[in-house]
Length: 454
Image (cartoon, rainbow, N blue to C red; front, side):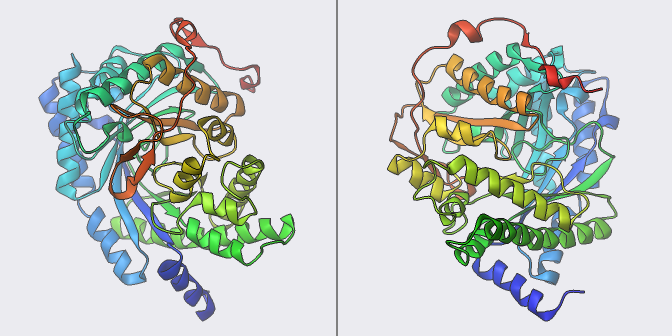
């Protein structure tokens, strides 16, 4: 039973500390949509999404009213499109048609984003995989709500360096082709290693092949709640610090569990997982960097930052696992730059560099996220950054990812405006020494020795 004190405490977290359910994401399998021609495939995809998710948004809005819990986004993830389109797609134009069909369906049911315009290429690329990847410079600008991800490596298979090289070229091409657009379409593209099948967060969400026909996954966030809790234990021991984070994460996860169960019952769709990720926003006080500073750092990026982030990530997961039997996705702490005002401030004051962020990705939930780099950064350098992150994920048996924004026409210190939830970001310096000779090699980096655990 929940007592009156806990109700008051939850209300305070919502009203004063930016607690929210960041997303209800409905995963939808499109495996039964395969067809003999592209028009039929697009029609099948549109109809399946519209039929399955027709009540998702209204259900989320009703739960908000009934429980007073803000649900910021309602989203959809689908089976990686390269798997569905292999039966009939014959060129990049066909994949653009599919992306538009997904976008139309997302608009029809009213969701914020739809993920799954994706390819899983950790060991090699099929013809359909490569066509999807090469369509990205055209498909992403042609759509408003479609998000894409490409998994280029895993602990079990190694890193597909041909795909890594290609993704560097594609990211640069997207940035150059959309220089005049207000929205940075690279923000809708994530490159993964060890991508999870049940991630509800965009831009990397897709409905894995091992998932059921439809499922409800919920992502909960509350950096402001954790920061406020830590304000009360300044100067205390690490034991007190850990217990405070863990107990707070438990409370946040219970809110997500309530919303997930309600959505599942009302929609008649199985509940999948709760993703407890401290995902920041540009709002004041809703910052992972400020949590680290509340632990005793002068600024995010100072010596001790990686240790503080490791502690935070571990205690968040421990609290979440105690609160729900089905914690999954990318649970932990995100460290995007543009979406976190504290991270932005740390970059501006010079305490946080790209290299320090890379070190922090060894212990955070994901990787290098929403980072603006100079517009003249070469495609091979972007590929090198992706390769470094994929190597961290592969060796450490964790999910890592890269979401870079080449800011065409801008240089270090300039400011790039993204708008909305994405905020803005200062352009960060990138190592100028070339990795062309390494990236241009063909093939893949083999799986590490500790992958052989059968």
